Image (cartoon, rainbow, N blue to C red; front, side, top):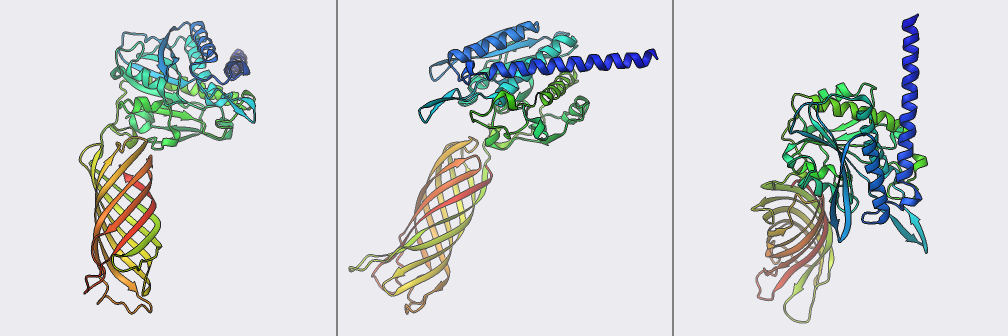
Length: 472
């Protein structure tokens, strides 16, 4: 009977504790996303208010707290970091981070609208504060130091996390950071599962997650975060080869809209996630080793691949140009698909060979010709590093075309009078976002396509196309 009573009392106390935790998480999100903080845009007085709120919360949890000041575009910004000391001397650290800045306010139809940023990322910041309280309440014994850090200026280029990773508070340098956990948009668990990416950077991640997930949360796990569209502060650590794991409930909330408000957040879900993260931090802090696996997403690697490969397709126009008389050819449609291989001499210099099949229709004085060609452009490339999320390149080189099929219709032409071989100059430039590119290319033929006569006819074409890099 006493045992049953003890179980009932324990359960009731747990329910009361959970309710209190949920209430505090809700309060944190409501304050941080309130109208009075005007969207927490970096470098504003309202951002300073958010900083002070975070500092007070960390201090109330009994943590040593520091403000790390820096400037972005001439605006004063600050990271807020708090230290949970290890139970025994250690020079190893786990960083748990969340950005607290958002988009501020914007004028729309003459009216100022507040971008509240409840899910993005008052939710992650509130979870950070809840984790601090859980450590304060439980007096947990840990073998590694834990740094809780609220980053500023994430929305304008991950500036706060980059500054912290280059000069980490409490740690002597970034090499002492053995693991980074990032919380960004964690307020919509009601929509399904917790998305986790980057676990492949850590050798023993399966064991840690299995021990931490005592409430059987539904997790969607990706080994590496390869998408630039899900970028967040973990990137600043991942590119330094620090195992970095990202946690998010996704972009189902009103992402980057004024409607991202506190009343839409799943606070019970946040309490569950906070408990899971707390368990995971404890497991990681007490793990015998936290070792980088050597696996890293290509966009986070500082090393340029010696070879790059990809595919492309495009549409444009082609023409046959008369160099005699008053006659001129007319433009016709051109389509092409290609495979390319690129050898990178360095981050900015490369040589690219493409193999493409080109189909075009050109109009000569004799009539319309339809050609199918095998084209081999070889170009020298001047580029921004392929590992960067956004880039451009410029190309210049030569091409060789072989026309292996043609429909001369009623022109009276044949391969006896029309050359199947063409050479010339090729130039172009491209824009790239992650592995996707938009290219423009010009070809200027130097050969005479008019066989058996000195009356020269040469080719020209313009193509705009899309490319995708399988490896870069």
